[in-house]
Amino acid sequence: MPEFPRYRPRRLRRTEALRALVRETRLSPSQLVLPLFARPGTGVRQAVQSMPGVHQTSVDELVKDARAAADAGVGGVLLFGIPERKDEQGTSAWDDDGPVQRAVRALKQELPQLVVVTDVCMCEYTSHGHCGVLVNGEVDNDATLELLSREALSHARAGADIVAPSDMMDGRVGAIRTALDDAGLLNTAIMSYSAKFAGAFYGPFRDAAESTPQSGDRRGYQMDAANAEEALRETWLDIEEGADIVMVKPAGPYLDVIARVKAETGYPLAAYQVSGEFAMIQAAADRGWIDRERVMMESLLGIRRAGADVIITYFATEAARLLR
Ligand code: PBG
Image 1 (cartoon, rainbow, N blue to C red):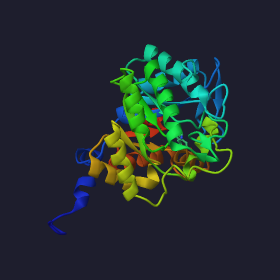
Image 2: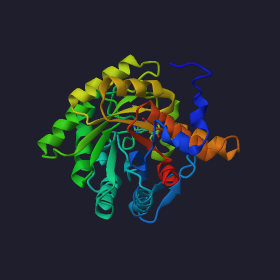
Image 3: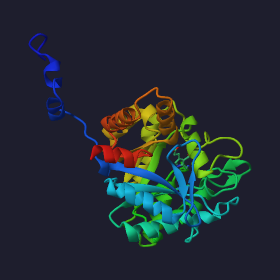
């Protein structure tokens, strides 16, 4: 490499045109996915306290938010459901008339070009708020697989392009792939939350999805924040079981994991900028401590630079508008 004073990196930083010419990483609206929360009813739009700008909406209102996202060029939406009732087994998860299933049908009719992803998990549907069935106070892995498969099938039958299991049970990708294939749903893709870390960054989401565990926490199934090698094993397992897209979640505090998973698997990779990451930026900006738009774009660019192909973010519509 040439040395100073022959080589001066500042030469290419002098104007925006020069900087743009040699920019290594670009963000495109089509890579962004917007999470949306569907609840029963019509004309319902309830603000989520800990996530300013995020709402739980009935399907009619959800379609409006999805249309605004699509108009801005956002690539897809990720649907979560708040059901009418919850029970021990989370049986409303596979109700073909549930809020997620109805939202999928409405979106596929109104906005057929928008990619529709559904979150597959039990925590929004169980009365205890855990991501699977409880047996003697512990989430039973193998008994949960059957329930997740039913839920994924119901989403796929409604027309979801991609189902995204976020429960972290072992073997769920394989179980869901088999269930989809047996039902002839060969083209429904699986985006697996493969390296999903247990931690405090999901707090605001649990308000939004009303899915806080009534007792205990999720450390018995989600990953330990200290483990990157294990994240690779988890990801390879999901790939071998049939995942089409893998995921690292949260995003910002796990950029090293994003970089390694991308480099070592080469698979399409999604990263989820979760509720806590979003809330921190919103809160600091509200106090006037940071420039909201610039921090938002820088945080997304960093996730992209680390290696994510897809970014799931509550900023999707706004970021897409700025990118246009
Ligand atoms: C469901 C699920 C969670 C998130 C996505 N899917 C919550 C959790 O695991 O507790 C978190 C998303 C966010 O924080 O934005 N299991």
